[in-house]
Image (tube, rainbow, N blue to C red; front, side, top):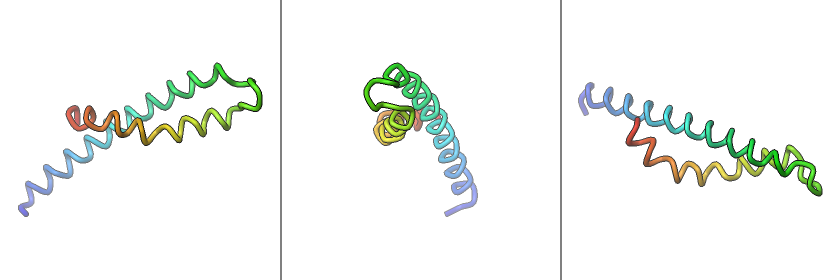
Length: 72
């Protein structure tokens, strides 16, 4: 493998990961804001809202990875 191929591959992967992390941060923030409406109902607290947001992240990765690859 040539040096320029490794360099190009590294740049593309890093750009894709940066875009994916940005999307996940935005979607996670908006999901958490959306879950704040349910605080105080029964035993639903902030820790449950954060846990719900964290546990939905793998699905968000699956949804946003193709877009991140195209942008990155």
